[in-house]
Amino acid sequence: MVQDKTLSNRIVDLINYTLLLIFGLAAVLPFFYVIAVSFTDPAEVAKGGLILFPKKFSLAAYEYIFSTNVLLRSLGVSVYITVVGTLINLLFTSLMAYPLAKPHLRGRQVILLGVLFTMLFSGGLIPTYFVVKAVGLTNTLWSLMIPGAISGFNLIVLKNFFQSIPEGLEDSAKIDGCNDFGVLMRIVIPLSMPAMATFALFYAVGHWNTFFSAIIYINDNKLWPVQVLLREVVIMVQSRIGDTEMDEALIQPLTIRMAVIVFATLPILVVYPFLQKHFAKGVLLGSIKG
Image 1 (cartoon, rainbow, N blue to C red):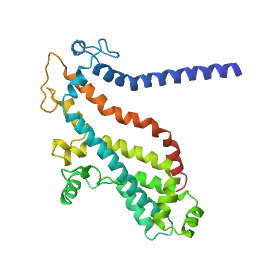
Image 2: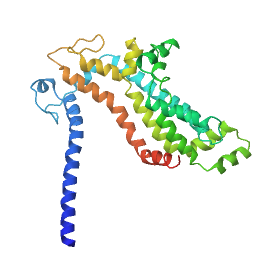
Image 3: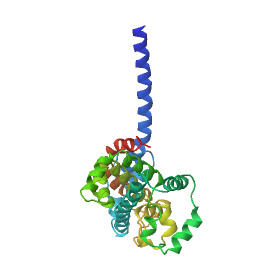
Image 4: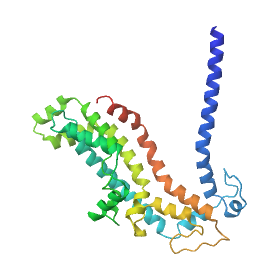
């Protein structure tokens, strides 16, 4: 019986590993394809076929996309809204989550119900656009950061995390003369760094991938983030970046698209591993106490 059970377990493990390998390859191979095409000679790409390794290495696509400052300008916009927007998100989320973590706060349940309501229903695209336009945020980078300053889900989890911090620490700080804001900044936030790092990555990825909001609120192409520029490059039949014309004999539209995709994805992939370890710890700790 023991041998039969061991054999069945091995068969199940083999099936699991095989399926995981297949799913893993299905997820990874498109990335290899994008990177390989971006570094492949345009003449080889023009022949067609699946390319998982550059048959003839070439930097022509990257030389082309960096021949103008349009891509670098869009990258600067994306970096700005990612850094500033994430700081705004963390500040506003913390300032709202901390008082909601206090059971004695009057109207706390009503506010929490309002937050939960926003997680289920939204005002809609057109009303949101009119609100953003009415406050004068259209065609500014603030329109990409202020409307989504607080995520309802992140707020609830961070509130639960704050509730898990012993009240004795806050009482000790108040005895030493700290007010509520001082307790938040000197005691609560430093103890909440795993959760803050987790939400910082959530917010940063969202800002870096800002696409639809930029199309709606931004008319000036000088304020386009890199994802919008990537969209323009991908959907254009004849690829152009800025005022630089493309020589069809030297470059292929596909290699340009893949090079821009690599360039737009690389920064967030570099940052991700440094904060990934905080994911499980931050979210799980924040979900212990309701």
